[in-house]
Image (cartoon, one colour):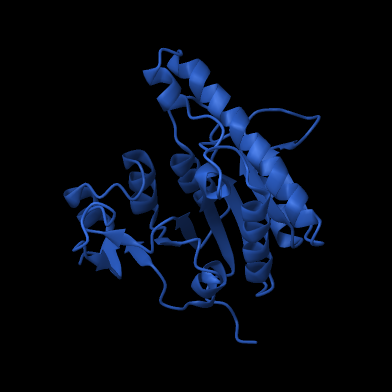
Length: 241
């Protein structure tokens, strides 16, 4: 088997990725599918860290729009990410993959606290780590958490799994003539306001030279293909176009 292109990656999963056929919550079929995709990618020998969102259960910003205090809503959203992380851990471990959930604030009964050196050690020992509760701070998204954790664990790339097959010049759902980029610079993303990630996450990746690959999670085998170095999705990079 040829060596994978990336030896250590940070995979960003949205909470919505687990909804599947439901309107909210966790679809067990979709959860098992995601777990299989991660297991297949891990078979390449790549070290995998995962940051997972909680939007399938609770979204703090949306709650704030309905009158919930923003800080309270954001903490509730962080707790939702822990639920998703525990569900994914359970599914992965049923396949025999050793997994650790690490949270940004202490929840000793159910997960380890996130400590950078400990996270690195888990990766070196071949464990998949699932990083929950965002950064542990309100007003910061899980995209920002993914960018921050990618830097902390020295990930070579941030893989952003989405519902679309890359970055487009406009919304492909609303515009059938939207054009997909094979690669694009962070400066161009910011100039065009393409919102691949929130501005804080984008700036963190740009300033620290971490490429982001945006791809369709629902295309079976894509996580593995990206790690192998196949041309999948859109690569967002630090160089100029």
